[in-house]
Length: 253
Image (cartoon, rainbow, N blue to C red):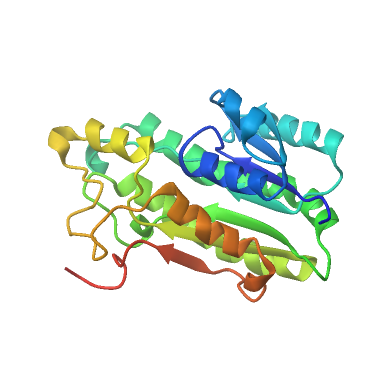
């Protein structure tokens, strides 16, 4: 198979880490962006592909541009960008500080936008009629079903879904397919920490209604959908927001 190159933003843990491991197992060359340290095992034994960690604050223009300049030093083309970065600030909107509100939008909205706009020239270079390049954003069912004390996070995901559709229309003619994955609650440290930090436990991982499937998703559940979106089986999906939420968005319970 021809060598393929991907950038995974937010690759030091949770869904991003699982995504990087999936790509490495398939033999991709993966550049991992994160402000956190990556596990040493990611580079050592994650699969036949190779992993290059890059420290990057996706909310900072200079940091993103420096990371992609380093990537361009390795390859002049990319086949995929997967944006899994995200933070959450829990609390009622009328009590949230301006600093917390700005921070969550900076990472969850500005960050994916900065990564995508900076990656476009490399993604164009990696696109072909046989295999279009891809951008996948990580959204959430919270975009249309916000949880109590999770309004700011939900607003960032609603904004990201609009950016997904806008980018999709702009970039499809240039050989880049843009879609988003919208999980429900996922069993990751990110979700557990958000629940623990909420006032009186009011931010529940499962929201205010049960999950029809009866369990939280795993990171692997989400990454399996990303794997499909990165394949040529998804070539007709453009600007789609694909839910993988155990039925939360399907019914009211």
